[in-house]
Image 1 (cartoon, rainbow, N blue to C red):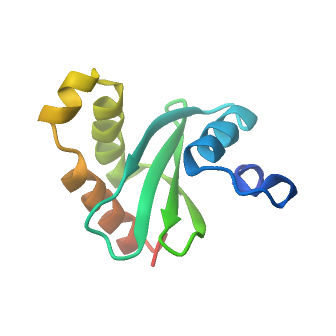
Image 2: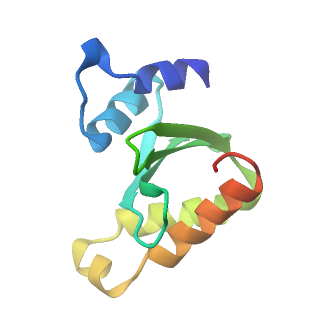
Image 3: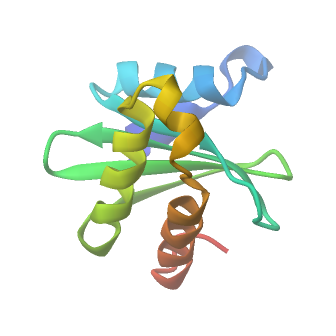
Length: 119
């Protein structure tokens, strides 16, 4: 997790877009981006992404509205919500319009907060 958090840090003080930072962190830590979504309806979180590491673990990265990044390693109870969001991300763009991911994203955030990973 330390290597992962270091890979999320700004290089040379330059603020990269959230998506670029997530992709870069996945590449540096031999993971795969599972999803990267905007979170509507949450008072503190603007974006959320997941990086998968095989069947073992998943790292969740959130961008707070303050600009801070938070990272958490998840598995277990959060896995079905990560899988649902990953499936939505992998679906064709035409399906994105028909299938709403917002409720799933909010439930995942609630689980992360309940587990003490987020405020």
